[in-house]
Image 1: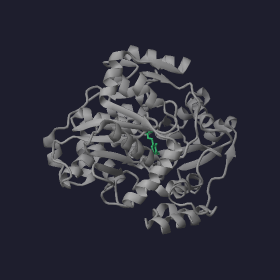
Image 2: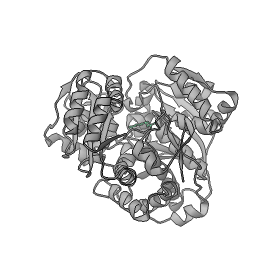
Image 3: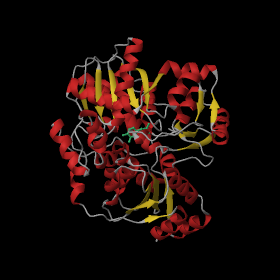
Length: 496
Ligand SMILES: *Cc1c(COP(=O)(O)O)cnc(C)c1O
């Protein structure tokens, strides 16, 4: 099976090339030429098997240039109970008559990004072995919090890789900062930027195309790659958990094989919900895809009007991993919806970078609305939802997941749809302790992060993740803070 670039249909590459390269040269994203199918018989054959076996079945349909041994190695190295706190890898909790929370945060960094970023280093090194043998892979990441830590955990001590993460000095939560500055591993490092996330991101982008750095890489037999969700290697592991969740729902007699499920996803860069769309188009019985946004509601507006407009005020919210005005993976969906026309996509995305806006035609808008429902909620409603869900079901959700729960409730009230629904639960509540605490108690909060964790534990009786508790006694290894002009030198230093 081959992959095409969304901005140049003549660019055709293997899965290994798509993953090693990350992004196509003209800026397009790689998508499968033909989406493989998953039949009810395939799902029936999965029943009772482990998460890893389910993952191998799904991945083998996409990564056709990987051998069975290679896939086994990648999957079994990534998804183990040494790294995930449950042998099931993800869990499903029932909250209410028709709603099920798919907990995707049982990995080492307590956010759903582990589901992809634990696997990506193995996919990437295996891909590089096929396409650029002997090269060392250098991964640069600009992060607003969750991606950086998940990538560091995924790549730490992985042979023939090096990683450097830049984060905005004042743009991440205390817990997120501590997670990164105490990171272990001989091949990884972390550096704060005196600036915001955009400064970090534009700095990294510039380094990717710096001719002096390119020369240096060649000399050292190294290559750059991306751990960002534009890399196909981050998207494909996410298709797995929707198919696995469907199978689990059948195994538990919550649905019958063939019944439809809706899916609701708290959305930022559109990677997670796009994976559900792909699962649906492979043949998984999925009904509506409910796209939940916070106050940065570009996607809600786009789904209702067909106009994508990023020219608007940016809000820093209680669900920071969804504070995004350009959802990169939307490009892959639109490529499908416009009939896979690379000219149309190139035109829209040129408009987006020039004017910050584009408009799709009536046909694309109609297709969009038949698959997707868009909704949003603000921080007030997010906190109320955390409080209500806790009171009603004894279930504690994080701020991102709460946005999805609220939008799901609104969707049900508005449409009367009673289809059973999987809601993606994307982070442990302990990662956003302060806002979660404020949602369930009016008491004064202690200022120390770990005292807050203790308070949340005593109120909720929910055990905090070991990996977050362990941070308390970890040594800070990285306290460099540099200006964005010093980023190039920092990269040169780590290449040696
Ligand atoms: C990244 C992230 C999201 C958004 O996911 P996308 O794939 O970017 O849409 C939602 N919740 C949490 C906790 C995240 O870390």
